[in-house]
Length: 221
Image (tube, rainbow, N blue to C red; front, side, top):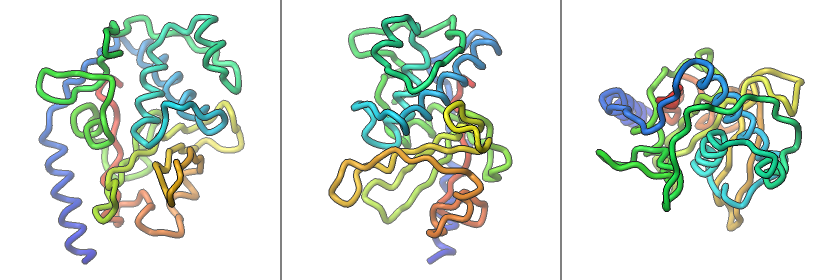
C-alpha cells in the first residue's frame, strides 16, 4: 500500500511540475513582495488568536490571508480586523482591482480568475513546487498534503516562520483543520520541529511520507 501511495504522490508531483502558473496577482517589485509576505504570514498567524468567520477550512485560511494582505490597511480596516497586535508593515502598492465577485486573486481555469479557490486549485494553478525538503521553507510557503482516503483529501498549512505573536521560535506553522468530528474545526499552530515528529506519520512534512506532496510558493512571490 505504501508503495502504491508513493507512486501516486510521485505522479502528482510530475503533474504539478507540468502545470503552468500564471496567477492573476502581479506584485511590482521585491518591496511589494516583502510587504505581501509580511501581511500574509501575520494574518494567517493572527487567525489562531482571533478566528474570523470566513475561515472554515485550510484553503479559507490561505484565501483570507492573501485577500486581506492586499487590502489598503486603513484605520477603518484595522478597527474591523481587530488584530491581536500591531502590524507595522507597509502596504502592497500595486494591488489587483476588485469587482462584484471580490478580488480576482486565483486562477481557477484557463482565462478565469476568482477570489474563491479550493486547496488543490491554489497549489496547482497558483503556486509553484519548491520541493519536499522542509529546510527549503520560507515564510509564506504552503505545505501541501494529500490524504487520498479522506473526505477532503487536500490539505494546506502556512509556514509563518518567525511569529510576531509568539517569539519563542522561528519555525511556526498555522493551519485550519477543516470540519472534524461533527464540528467546525479550528485553527491550530505548531512548530515545524514538532510537526516533523507528528504522532501520525502521514502528517509529517518529510520526503519519505507519500502523503506529503511538497512545499509550494504562491506564483506572485
